[in-house]
Length: 427
Image 1 (cartoon, rainbow, N blue to C red):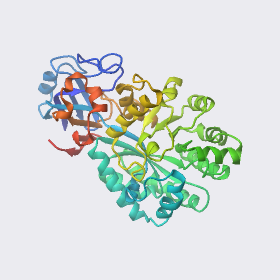
Image 2: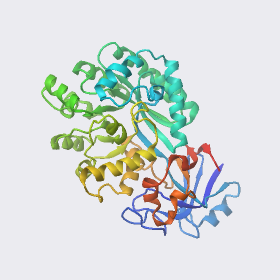
Image 3: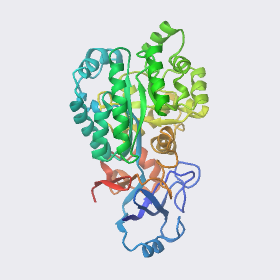
Image 4: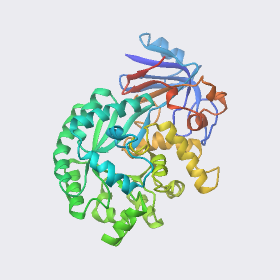
C-alpha cells in the first residue's frame, strides 16, 4: 500500500531543501509546495507539484500508482518526525510531584524514593502515557533512559513509536538490575522489526564509579552498543567529580573509556573549552534540554559554542517530572529563545538550526543520519503532518520554518506515521 500527501507545504530538512519554494531560515531552499509518498516503510517520492521530484511530477506518480491512498495536503505542512533524544518516558507517573526545587533536593527527597517503589508494571503504565503524548505531538522517535527498559520495550512495540532504549545503571544494587534488564531489552528489540535499538545508560559521572562504569562498558562492547549519559548538568556534579577524581565529568567519562562508544551526552551545560574539544574529538552528541534545565535552574548549555566547534547538538525534553511535558514543539521554541537571551544576540540559533536539532541532528545522534529526520527518497517513512490553518499560523507562507519553531503548537499535529504506519489521524 502506498500513501501520498499531495499539495502540502513540504519541509524536507535535506541539505538546502529542494524544489521551488521559499528560502526560509536556512541556506538554500528549505520548503516547497508539493507531495510526499511512501510505500511500506520507505519514502518513494518527494517533490514539488507540477514537475520535478524524485520520480517525475506528482501527476505521473499518481498515474503509475492508482492504488495509492491520496491525502489532500492543502492547508497542511509535511515534515520529518521529531526525534526526542533525551527523556525518561515513565516519569509521567511523577509529573508535578515535586516542583520549584533544585535538582539534588528534587532527586534525593522525592524522585529517587518514588522510583524505589516502582514495579515494571508501573513503569509500563507510565511509559504508555508518555509515548501517546509524544506521538500526538509529532515525536516519532524517542531516546529513553530508565530502569526496567524491557517493560518499556513491550509498550514501544504496541504503541508503534520508534525508540532507542537505554537501560540505566548506578552504583550499588541497581547494577544487578541493569545486568538483568539489558538482555531482556535486547530480546524485545530484536522482535520489533528495527524500530527499537538499545544503548547502555550509565546515569552520570557522579553516580557511576570506575568499577561500575567498567562493567557497563564491557557489556556494551560485548553487544555492540552505544551509550547515553547525563553530563555536567549542575555545578554540584562538577564539584563532586572534581573532589573524587580531580577532573571534570567530561574528562572522567573519557578516561573511563565511555567515549570510545557512540555516545549521547544529555544536558552538557557546564563545559570548559577543553571539555568541548573532547566531545568534538570523540564524536559525542550533546543533547540540549532547555526547559528542564531552566526549571531546575541548572544553567544554559553553550549550544552556539558547541555547534561552532563542530559538535553535533540534538534536542530532548527530559522527563515529564522535570519539564513537565514531552512537547518537542515547545522545546524548540524555548531552545531558540534561550540561546538568544543568553548571548544577547537575536541572530544566534535561527529557526532552521533549531529544527535541524529536533530532526536531522537527532537522527545523526542515534546513528541514523539520512534514514530519519529528513524527507527524502529511500529514507524511513517517519512523517508528520501539521494543520497550518489556525490563526496563530497566519500568514504561514511568510516562512513555514520559522512558523514551526516560533508559532506552531503540538496540538496542530494532525497526522503521524512511523515506519509508514499511521499512528495519528485527525483529518
